[in-house]
Length: 128
Image (cartoon, rainbow, N blue to C red; front, side, top):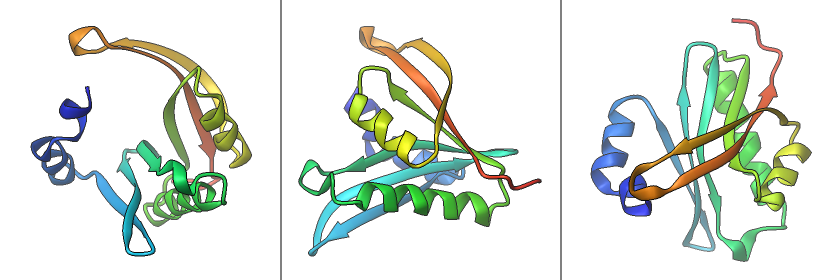
């Protein structure tokens, strides 16, 4: 699944289609990234990753604030993302940032992978 989601062709196609990738560097070392896609009325936060060495220090919340800034820059009214229902640490972090669980989704992927996710949404109050 990682090869399919993160190979160079996939990332290049996403960028060409309007997805924004931003990378986090801490002390000169790659430490995380975000990937977001502006849609008609909302921003889809596709990928949010921070190295475990830096988790629990408020940096993840700063990444979420950066995603909010991107949404505001595009005049979008909300941000949504998918998070595995069993990833309690991430769910808690998103809730701290103001996201709410708005739905669930089970999606069958290639090679037998199953995504069993919450859909979490942050309403920004921006009217488009």
